[in-house]
Length: 112
Length: 114
Image (cartoon, rainbow over all chains, first blue to last red; front, top):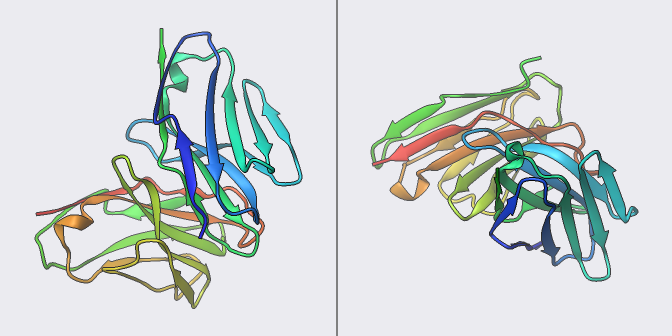
């Protein structure tokens, strides 16, 4: 089955700096890669996603890039703000399979 | 729309007790799933359903049962609770079964088994 790994497990940045969170996946047939943000005590919520036929996608301060050859995808957050502090989960879905496999999550802390 | 709702929000069980976690969605989504979240372990899939009458096992199904008699409801049953089932449980739903679309999560149920 699919295996999704996230690195690093924690990340601390200064407010205003950029943050990059990387995920790797194992199944080359995976074709959908979402990122979820979970604030403390809240439910996970989708912030951005990308499909395997696209290399990059942007939405205001966040972007996701996908490298199918290397089987990794990354979340980029620019001009970080304290409200970006949260746990971020990446996930992957294999084409013929309806299941999402999540990584273990990364805790991002933005220092004011 | 209420979205995805879960009850109860908190529950304490003794070892060996059984209970059902309720999940309902009002978005007419075909795909529903149950995850458990433990510190450092991410979101692990317990069971999922691609439509009424169809369920399948996820990554960690042991000790849990599900059924899907309607599109709206997807209850999770713990048959004989164990301390290892202490966790936060999230139900989620999605409009598309196979193509990959946003999963909407419920608010979660925090379960403690003593």
